[in-house]
Length: 137
Image (cartoon, rainbow, N blue to C red):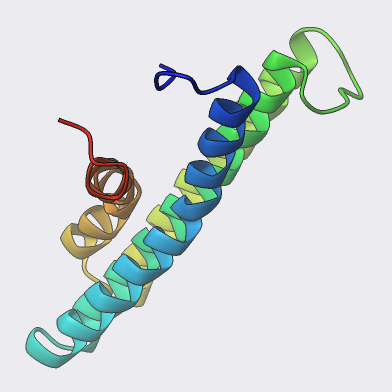
């Protein structure tokens, strides 16, 4: 959606700035969550939240790469079905690695799930920021 009088290129730049802010929101939420979990709930919960937050950031990175390949904004090395299979393998390895780490490290699985939700929370924070910063009604 463009604002009245805003050229399409300005809207694209605004969207790019919003996407560039997402990793910062994730970092802010991750740090706050790990500190609060460590202070109030202990090291095992803080470690689980940290593992979930790292997985959330890595997942955002994988999704961003996939979207960029689909939309053609980055060069695709191997066109076709192989790129989709490789993305699935990467995501499956991520999930498997996190489960193994959490299972054998003693970190909290529930805290890791909460940590994984920092990415959607960052998107919600960005929406609120856009509403406040650009004075939407």
